[in-house]
Length: 292
Length: 242
Image 1 (cartoon, rainbow over the protein chains, first blue to last red):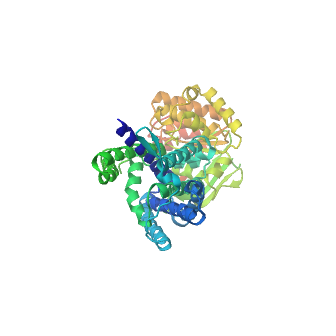
Image 2: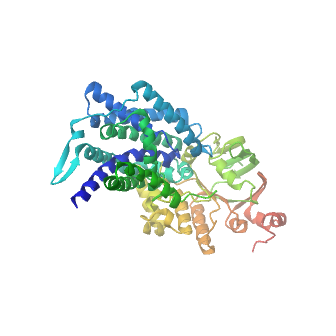
Image 3: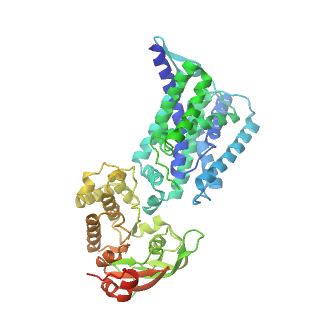
């Protein structure tokens, strides 16, 4: 029983981090219909902000988190203006963004590799290698803190979306862009801000990733399938769905890893992505896709 | 006499595609119900979308109280007092009824004023008050149409444009929808109605407009449109008004 609880706790803590990693991706898709394959490499960029802040100035990654979020959000504004805004009204926008963001991911990966080399990095605050013990059960402090901070950020985002005027505008644009525009929402501005928030969340997630996992520029390719499986299972565009899927898949992966080995744990996400697309492509909370 | 809203020789279409409106004209008189009829593809919905800024005016002009609306965004046109309820009702299915009503007053800066107006709307349309916490997407078609029309009242608009409000509704519900429209008109709101059921639309209108191939063919009192033998033959399926 203790072993099951142990695995459950480890899975839940990681699920919290995955939730933050995936929620930005989900927000950007929901509002702008951008399938952002560059999201994981932007998380890597956030991780590098935390790494160098720790290395050069001795800053804790949890303290760097808002800085990484702001830097990446600003990057998001620039990327949106340069790459995504012009084609926003194109009928094939989502399809185009797959190719655009794929190219963008390679460019950013190349830039990160040139700037920081492909050496594996990790930030090492004291708590990253420490743990709480409750009887036989241990809770790694790094994962626990990362999970708690993730959930705090997602809760703040949920409250913002639920109760603020701008949150109403974002939700309305996600559900019916044309109707939102007719009711006075400047949907282009909402798109820009939502994109910036989504990329800012990638930056925040990067700070957490920097001490939970090791990372290097090309690592983002490993994360694409993981993040896609989260947003597809949750329902493309549903942040709540992404959070729920993160916990489900992280816990399942933890159990599979514990009983069948770490290799099979990673496979959980690939299998989930495949099965969901085959059986229920709209995921848990997504809209049923319309047949052309 | 210059109308509240003037559409003059407007040419418009979707994206870079062919022009759907090809010299449309319309003069909207304050406080009246105007019904635009015409066959499928005549440009009726396109005309409303062009007025509200969803489609670009390629040629011609649209003026509201003398001010040109050319190049203005939908949110800017809304702030001038023109609301549009499109065919698909433009609701937010995963928002509650109350949240949908709040979105109706999105452009209002004063939040307490907005809540007060929503309370008034719920009083006038009790079904919306009863279902305030229900997701709009789970309501019946008639209730959704009521919500879509009631939502426009939050802003106290001067003109409300309704695109096929009876679409997909049972006859009994259609009557209710038209009575809401009449209620709005009685309060002094100018109505611009596009209705596939031309007879029904004209019967509830003061003014009739016949549009075909993107051009205005006839404008006049609704009673005249209803009794014109040529219009009856071509656009009312040969049916005479009862």
